[in-house]
Structure formats: C-alpha cells, structure tokens
Image (cartoon, rainbow, N blue to C red; front, side):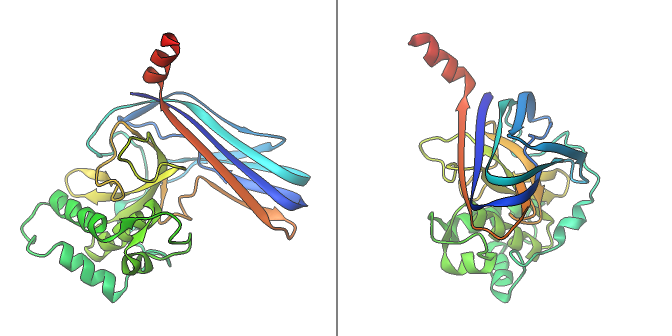
Length: 280
C-alpha cells in the first residue's frame, strides 16, 4: 500500500518570542515493512542545524528561528510504501539493547494496581509462549480502557488511565507499556500515522502504539486502542520511553508567552486517491 501523508503543526504565540529551537523526529523509519518514496519537512524561516540518527535508529533534526516570532509552522509530507509484517519490526537498525526499555518514567511508573492488572492479564499463562503473553496484555488494556477523547490529559499516568477506565491511544499505550514492564517485558512508545477506516480509533492526529520485545521475534507492535498489531495501514516514525520522550516535535522558546498549537494530519491511500481523480 502507498500512503500519502500531510502533517501540519502550527504554533501561535500571544506575544513574539526572541528565539525558537526545536528537534524533529518527523522522518519515517526505513524497515522491511515500510519504504519512503518521497518525504520532506518544511520549516518556514528556520535555520537547519545538526541532524543525527539516535541509538534507537530514529532520525532527529534540529532547527532554530531567530525572532521576533509570532507564528511558526512545520509541514511534513510525503509518500510511503507499506506492507503487513504482522506487527513485527524487521530491518530497523538500532544500537540500544532491548533491556533499556524496562525503564519506567513518571507516566509509566509501576504501582501495586498495575502489577495486579498484569497478573490478572496473564493468569493461567505460565506455560504460554512469549507472543501469546504479549497479546494477552494488549487484550487486557483494550478490555479495560475504553477509547474516549477529551477525558484525559497529556500528563495522565498509566495508573490513572487504567483506574479511570478510559482514554485515547496515548493512554492505551502507556498502560500497555506499564503492564509489560510488570511482566518483565521490554516495551516502548511508538509514534506514527494510521490510515483511518470506519472502525479505527485515534487517527485524528498522529497515532501511537506500543512495541513489546518478544523473545524469538524481537520488537512487535500492539495497538491496544484498535485491538490489532500495526499493519500496512500504519507508518512508523520513532520511539521512546513514553509520549513525551517519543514526541515527533520537541522545543523551547526564548521569552515568556502562551502558546497555541494547531495540528492537522491527513493520511490517504494513494492508489484510491489516484483512482478517484481518474473517475472525476
């Protein structure tokens, strides 16, 4: 499948700032499951700084803008060819050992309740395969956290989301990471895009899911919000310990001000789009 993406992030400041600096992880990974045909990241009036591939195999680029800056827009767009690998991440070159992703954060930190939830999810599965155990954790999250927009905040922890029983893809991912850690399974937060279908959840902006390191397979993606493993409808951008660490855009501004962020993401099937254009 060939997916076309247009991702626009527009920052508006209530007063001009002296300087703005950002780091971008907006370039899709090159793996056996996806290949970049064309991709660009446009940053108006910005100076491009250093770029590097981090230990997790993700490309990071820095940009700065000298003020006064009242508005700033970042546009990432392009065409990516994808295929279904049943969620298994293959051909992604990285240097960080999987064991590094047993580390929790403030958001994914374990509590007694999360540990009990992991035990409940894996009850009677001592002899099950590592993959079956990972699927059981993902099912538990899907069953106990209902997809409900605007009920949680960016700072909502995994424990809070599980207790509240509702949230968005970010919350599903944080809870699954925490439960995996409780079961001694390395897990990480993944950002990317998803082509919406009638039944999909959480594709109004950039999407998120978890990757669990399964013995014998390596990293395997689990989208608990949609009860599936990532397939050809997904584009992987990058990863981290939690949503903040994996954010596609991170930045600082020089000058005290209030910031408004407007994000729009459009993901389309290039083949269907071309067919529709020919029929018009």
